[in-house]
Length: 254
Image (cartoon, rainbow, N blue to C red):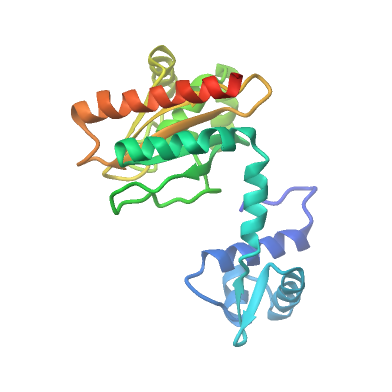
């Protein structure tokens, strides 16, 4: 959760901290356990849980609490509010049918890449993030493809705000190196991420044009390095990703 600021309402922050803790937990949590984790008194936690329960976002089971499935409605309604979701979803599903790999859609929001949608590949592997998670733009192929569509001024602003964390030994964590990478992406219309977010995982991505007023977005494929490498990655998979992006662009302009 982001740091509080001068316009932050403490009670709202506490409610979301409690809710996010419940969502991240492996199972239901009791009041005392929650209080220890979030650093609030048991009385305060109990009152927030009561409010969240009344609103339908938390369920009480055997004196413990878990997040309600009603939260799915919020995310689903937000996602369907983006025109690109309906336009991209069938194309990503077809991309996965064609390649057997996990396909993703990322949209830039507040200087981060939010995974709006991902398909399930034919193999057992799946990313360690889910739809709705916000990731640093510089660590994924779609994220770097998004950065490449932005002005240098905007990229500098994002780097100043979020930094260039070295998630792995392969992460591009130097500003000059990042701008050099973005220049190559602009020339080639394709971005690669080689073990920059997770060790042993690579990806390819390309931007999807939505117009000046729409958020920057990109699609991509990711998977294990032992499967995505060589000609299969550089030609077969990359070609499919670029072709899919072009088809999406046609749909969005017709």
